[in-house]
Length: 564
Image: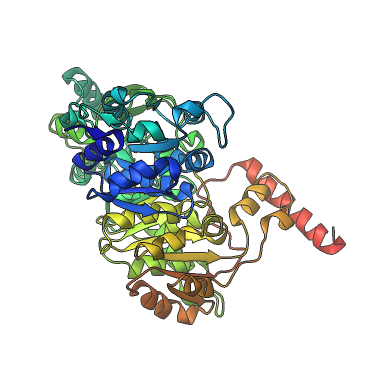
């Protein structure tokens, strides 16, 4: 029996396991909406199309499965683009659908006219307009296959009249559509890695998101080599914070002991990471990088050996070939430094550190300690990322995500909505700065509307805190008129949206309020008034940055005195 193009598309999305489509309905998408209405797929109507793209990205990043978003003709589709960079930069499979005017109106500068295939070209691995019903089955298959192959974003433009037209054939080869298989390196490559490792004395292992699912193998590798395990932000979730091998993070969201371990080892193993900050990586060149994506190997620092492979099968093949190392001097030294750093973190997150004031470290630590064992933490971007990334103590079963490669402010709530839609019984916690939350706060209405019990914790310091830090690091007087802003009362805002809202500015009340908020059956916002001038820990500071901070502070003092 023939089906419309819209029905054929929805049929295949249902068959490959898509549970929701996030979008804003419009005239060009009405045929798609009608097909969704008759399917098992849930339509999640958002308040802004960027929120739809972020929700799909959040789902895809967490699961590795295809997620879908949609926007209607013209502005409805252009709004998708910014959010789609989340999926593109973090290599998550997302299918974006653009409604389009009927074909007869193309090329005459009609109302809301755009060229979607040009617009989406940068963010997409594949973008195509379905111009005829007979073309639809093959193009739909190609789009989904491309999203999985990247993985990344695929985009389809769907003229309204094509969506409503009948198509004689179903989408072919649906069984071939799914996440790509793991890559196992060849025997020669495994032997080469083993030789380099056996020759090394002190080894540090840097673990990225590609290590997910390999926790036991990583522990075994650490024990075999007497090597500390350190992680990127995306890799933080893989192992519990209190595992003695799991020393902490590298970079600004990291620790000084880890920076030293990476710089002082005579061999660095980079596993499943394309860590971008070269100034935190060693320059000696004795680096081995193992990654699924050949394009990522060797581009961040001088590398002696690169192997294309997935971490799990590579380590499974490598471990039996490695000799047991006996000398634990290097490991023990890193572990001692790590314990001292942990004590510093504990002191900085002490609720009673400064009576009457809440420090942001205390908020992140308290949220972490109160969260459920399988909670999902979604970080926004900014100074709040440093508080969350450094003070949350994950248990190895919890998940952590955010805008880690795109580094876009205002993306956490949208991603959290998508994640929460997968399982409304799972605890999903957003940790965001006020500036980031304010950007897309309308997506809190999406959470209320669709009964997504997301909990939003706002670090309220009435400023873009990271911008101040960045300006000072290069000796520039922060532009306070541009950086600082007034905020609404977030508890009142939440209640106006039909949810629960809380405000806390007294450290003595923080724990009780967070307990109450996290126990709410529906969505909730907690506005945490935190000290605005908190300085983060700096695991590694260049000499120029020290000079920059000093110059900036002198300029601030002069400005305060002169009124300039």
